Every structure is written in C-alpha cells, then in structure tokens.
Amino acid sequence: MTESAPSGGPTIACIAGGVGAARMLRGLVRVSDRVTAIANVGDDVELHGLHISPDLDTITYTVAEAIDPERGWGLADETWQAMDSLGRYGGVTWFSLGDKDLGTHLFRTGRLRSGTPLSTVTREIARAWELPMELLPVTDDPLRTHLVIDDPDQDEPVEIDFQEYFVKHQHSVPVHSVRFEGAIDARPAPGVIDTINGADVVVIAPSNPLVSIDPVLAVPGVRAAIEARRHSGVAISPIIAGAALKGPADRLLRELGHEASVVGIARLYAPLVATLVIDEADRDREAEVEAEGVRCVVAPTIMKSAHDAASLAQVVLDCVGEPSEPARPAERAGET
Ligand code: GDP
Ligand code: CA
Image 1 (cartoon, rainbow, N blue to C red):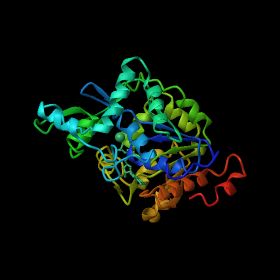
Image 2: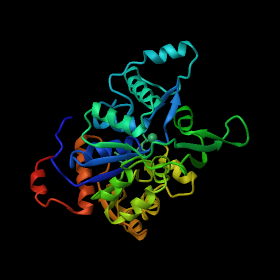
Image 3: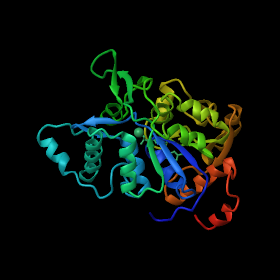
Image 4: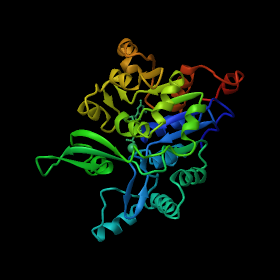
C-alpha cells in the first residue's frame, strides 16, 4: 500500500462489480478502514476445471496495487507460459490467464473442492494480499449471468454465458435480455445483509448497472436491505457524457430499453439511493437527474490515480454527512 488508511472512519458497504468498483474501493480505503465490498459473482466461470472469479480478483489486485495498470485486469508483470502450453494442446485460450494469476485460481478451486465456502476462500485471499478492507462475494451459492444474443451463425437468438459474451465476443453482439441463473435460490453470503444494515454509508460503485450491480441485487434480500438504507445510499454514475469509460454499459443500457445517460442511471438507482454523483461533464443534466427523485452531486468522477479515487471517496462520504466520531475530520486533514 502506498498510503496508510485512517484509523476509524465511517462504516462503508460498497456494492461492487469489477474495474469501476475496484477503482472506487481504492479510494474508499483511503478515507475509512471500515470498508466492506459486496461483490458480483455472476461473471464467475469454470475453465480448465478452475473456478475463476473475475470481479473478486480485479478488486483484490487493484486495492493491493498489484493490478496490471494498462489492461485493468490481471496482475502486473505477468507472463503467459501456461497459456502457450494450453495452446499447444488446442485448449481453450480465448480467456487469458497469466501464470501468476493462475496461482489464485488454483488456490481458490482447491479450497472450494475441499468444501470451503467462496466467502471464506475470498477472505483468505484478501488477507494474503493484506487488503485494508473486507471483501465478500454476494453469495456462496452458484449465480451465473447469461445473455440472450443473436446467434452469429443462425437466424435465431441463443443464450450464452457472461464471459463468452464479454471476452470471446468482445461484447460486440447485440443483447436481447439478461438472466441470472441460480439467483432465486441464492442466499446472501454470511455478513452481507448485516454489513448493509450496519453501514453508515451504502455506496453503489460506478459499475455496469445491468451485468455487475443487478446480479448482486438479484440475490433475495439484498435489494430490500439496500432500499431500507436508501437515506444513507450514494451511487456514482458509471456513465459519463452518455458513454461508458470502457466496456459495454452504454450499449447494454440502450439495448435493454434504458437511457444511456446519467438520467437513465438516476431512474435505475432512485429506489436504492438518496444521492447520485455525476461527472462534471454532465453538469448540464443536474436538474433532470433530480427530477428522477435523487439528490444530484456533481464532481470529477474519473479515477485515474489513487488520489482521484480518494477525492471521489471523500465526496461520497460528504453526501451522507459525518455520522460518527465528530473528531475525525481534523484527523483526516492532509490525508489526500
Ligand atoms: P467490470 O466488471 O470489470 O466490467 O467492471 P464494472 O462493472 O465494475 O465497471 C464497468 C463500468 O465502470 C463501466 O461502465 C465504466 O464506465 C465504469 N468505470 C470504470 N472506471 C471508472 C471511473 O474511474 N469513474 C467512473 N465514473 N466510472 C468508471
Ligand atoms: Ca465483471
């Protein structure tokens, strides 16, 4: 870690996808040492017999400052010899797994096979990386995002799983609908509901609303718990000036009947949070956002550096006020 987290700080529950959430968490841990991320597992995939949890790993590697900064996923200074070896045998190589990263998947899979729940393994991995926060998968039960697309080879729709859409097809095919397999029977992982109930601030990270945040909300009990804490809820728009910074969020919003703008995001999140933070680029849409029933806060929201992320994290906390320990603002002075 480059900076030490403050001692104390408000209790923060952060509903998280992958890259956008990881950047937000990198900031949140700089303004509080009581951060818990509740993360999406709908993107999880089994490949080569290994259980891969892309969003959990993106969060872990980013907050540990070990992520590859260019790619935004996987570990820095990675090598790819196992992939070369797989290619020799004609194995599946469209989903790249670096040599160092493979160790994480080997460990996770081995522990799961011996009967350990995903939340426990995730905690073990987070501890090994010395994360200054808790990381919880939203559920220990299987939950998988599937998308219905036009079959590129035939004239009828076909359902594919998330990584096929995202990585194999590079999210370039139109989507008709999204389905979260297993969601109805999924139970929140131990600690998920208590974390939301006990949080001073519930943050919805700037993640893809339809394939990163929605699967978390689809676990029975989670949406209701967040709605009950709406007054302490703050979301950050992943859409800036009508576009996603990266990935298919803008296109997916349009394809599934939403507006790809901060107003569309306000419409989706108004039942869940009292405040939406939008980027300065969208300042002219403030009144339209508020017309959707959320308070609108305008701030720089592009998190290139840890400093950007910490500044945005402070904006998020300021949205809810200072619920505990009134002495802390002075302690924090000069932090960022
Ligand atoms: P994934 O699971 O890795 O695809 O990532 P997420 O679902 O967490 O995040 C994808 C979304 O995050 C995209 O819509 C991006 O526009 C958004 N995003 C990524 N970085 C930032 C950032 O620094 N600021 C904001 N406001 N949004 C971001
Ligand atoms: Ca993801």
